[in-house]
Amino acid sequence: MRRKAALILLALAVFFAALAPLLRWYAFPRLAKVPANQYQDMVLEARDATLLDYGTMRARKVPKVTIVQTLKGNVEASERIEESAGRDVVVWDGLSYVVGPDGEMVSKIPERYIFDAHTQEPVHATGETVDGDPVRREGIEFKWPFLTEKRAYQYFDAQARVTAPIHYQDTRNFRGLEVYYFEQTIPWTKVKIPKTLPVEGLTPESVAQTGTTRWYTTVRKFWVEPLTGAPVYGEEIHKEELRGGALLGDRDKVTAFAGHVKMREDYITHTVDLVKSQRLLILLMTSYLPWGSLTLGVLLLALALYLEARGRRPSGPAPTASQEPSQVSA
Image 1 (spheres, rainbow, N blue to C red):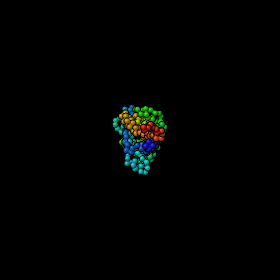
Image 2 (cartoon, rainbow, N blue to C red; image 1 turned 30 degrees about the horizontal axis):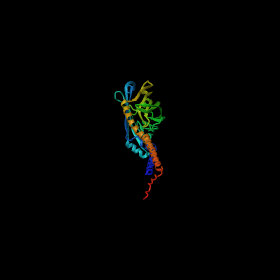
Image 3 (cartoon, one colour; image 1 turned 120 degrees about the vertical axis):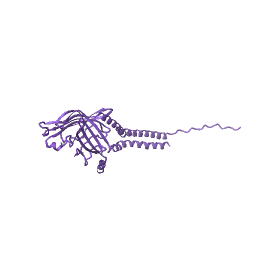
Image 4 (cartoon, helix red, strand yellow; image 1 turned 90 degrees about the horizontal axis):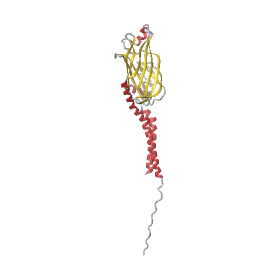
């Protein structure tokens, strides 16, 4: 009976020991993915910023500029692209909406970002755009891969339509989370005029006819939770200028926007809480379940060997029965 129990325990030990690497290296890469229907929004603010008054074409100091960023999963588009791509695809329809201190729109730039749900690598398909213009992204945008590494990544800049390295700087503690801090610098680059401008009748074509061009530079900073690859906080030191042309009169350039853009506090709290809950799911698949399964396998193996050893142990010599003296009849 002991030998039979030992064989059963040995089979279970082999099963759980084999399950550990399967969970980590086979199941996790296939189960961990960005949902196609995800929706998220974020509000950022630049206080004491500089903003162009398009009515006078003069830069002025303003108490606050607000940027609302939304990302909405387009399930219908992702399913359509998946049929031809042969893999899980996420399509995010994004919008960056900039509002001045008076509540009026300064600019809005839509974009469509198409990427692999598991690796976050871009997927090139019809509809990949920024402000209505077709683009071909290289590198990540908005989100890092699951299990982010301490290295530089290629990051796509939607303003300049270029990809540049975003460098790992160091590991920090942010609101109770261990995060990786990344930083990217985009030098002064000539960029396109947004198609939607705050002045009626002012279009990119009419600005181009004056000879005026738009230039942009930024220092982009992200605090990324490495297990989920989700940024929990971000900042930008952002500058835009209009240069040359008849639109500026006798001036060489004028600041269109300059400010230190930071996430609003309530969105920081919400993002940190959300990432903490998602982090537990990643830990379950990459650490808790694999190591628990391996530990259970080792314990079952030890118990199986113990029972097998007990079953093979000799039972010892049988005790001899004492003989009673025979009675002699009289």
